[in-house]
Length: 245
Ligand code: GLP
Image 1 (cartoon, helix red, strand yellow):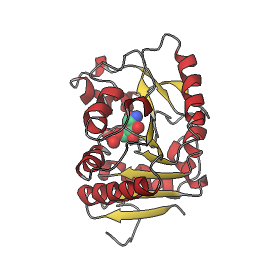
Image 2 (tube, rainbow, N blue to C red):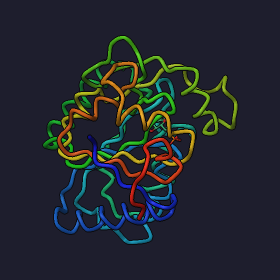
Image 3 (cartoon, protein in one colour):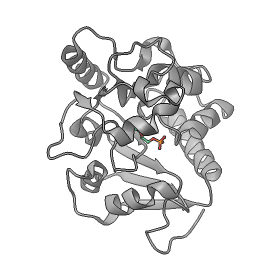
């Protein structure tokens, strides 16, 4: 069974995780972090800024990016990260890695990214959110999952939940993305998946208790030796009794 920690609300969760990451960075300044986007990590990123977490020697790799828009596009995950994290902490710009959705050769970009992750020594701490359909990164439920960084067609539900980045206009949300693969993620030495709100309760329950299936990519986390799910009470709502922090 995956390790699950339940917090009374999103604020407490974010603060606890930010404090933990800041402490890890003190012990391991050259930590390689894998980072998600989405609403879930926003408070965590702000708290890392408030706590003055020292990322001066850290390296980051974002999980995914939209295909067909460049890093300067306001809807890109690169822009999201600049706004919510990179502009708030002391990370060295040359150690920030985000897939380039405007790369002329997307498959080549994926290969380059895999090599960069390997070249940095692999990911030490991978943070994850979870989609309401159980996706992680842009690894969508499917008959087959890709092991390595790859190009992916986005589900309508995923595009819809990202529409806010494009002024709420679904037609502007790219139809494809680039994403780290399942093996890229599962090779991280430690993984923390965050989930908040009732809309995540079902996918969290299936990830923890359900069969390991390509129809719910997060279920593969059950195979990893060092995963922690950090949840608020609403996201843990279908897991039964838990001590709450
Ligand atoms: C997005 C991202 C994922 C993220 C997920 C959940 O599509 N590609 O990396 O974890 O959806 O987003 P949110 O935190 O907004 O619910």
